[in-house]
Length: 401
Ligand code: HEM
Image (cartoon, rainbow, N blue to C red; front, side):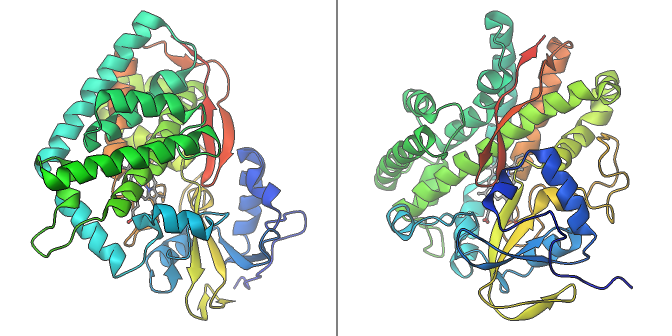
């Protein structure tokens, strides 16, 4: 039986913030070695001096995600943790809450997403994807990210929230090349969105219209609703995590289907048979949200390793998605992979991505529309990425068609 060893092998320094900024390939090779450790891998974060554990195996990421009372989200899910004043001013999103408030918010949000609203949003996805491909044909841009990958999910979230077109354009113009919520320009867009959404929430509270924001800010049968700060935090989460992760999935998707021509031929040969598989494999292979953090609530053992209350834990979704114990030939991009139990939308448990269906729908709709109308569409170089708090974000992707 393999004995758990709790420290990283020589040459891999998880405590150095630079490790998490390494290019994907270098990090991927390190994670493959770490998975041989058979359990959480310990390190001291040099920036904070905190004891931390990287969960690199599929089983460990799933186990921690499904034990929210042991692995808390409340102390913060990103590194570096946001300053206290930031949290006090802007409020916490549901991603950074534990029960009972987390469960209450999920219920309010779950009820606001009525079947009627979801159907309308999904129609909007198809229409927007078609409009963006029309625009490609007219304007012939050379960077896939601003032209399509950033635009589609951003428009979908804004129209779901009912943000007027004028406001949407203003916020998008302020977002900058690296997207929403990133230091600098993206952060300014975040602040102006919060203000816009709070104003909309105040208005809808006075005069509800039956849209999503009205449902979120007016009390449900149990008297629960989102406060205006919570509404702002929720909307920013949709943009900063939901829309941006979808943007990365779309960009990686086009690139993966370019550098794997046999997979592309399979997809274009029979889209109905392969689109769903392609979407899942893109999310597994690219893992747009590469990691989130948790804080250990009580001393306990995970896969034989002792974790202490107060330790920080990194859920390494990208590594879990290449775990050879779960995926045969994990480094192969294979749109026919079945089953494909990837953890790209989370490891299960109460925080599992509520936007997974919408994200899948967007990637599916865009690939269908793009390849039906422009079957030669392809990337012409590798994606240019920038580090973000949850992984690597795609800044640009040169493309042609
Ligand atoms: C490919 C695109 C996407 C990926 C890879 C992704 C991934 C994730 C992951 C890994 C989590 C954390 C799960 C956990 O902690 O267990 C999450 C949470 C979340 N996602 Fe997504 N997501 C995507 C798209 C979206 C979209 C389109 C939306 C909505 C418009 C969305 C809304 C959310 C929200 C609100 C949460 C927080 C849920 C909670 O804490 O209860 N996501 N997502």
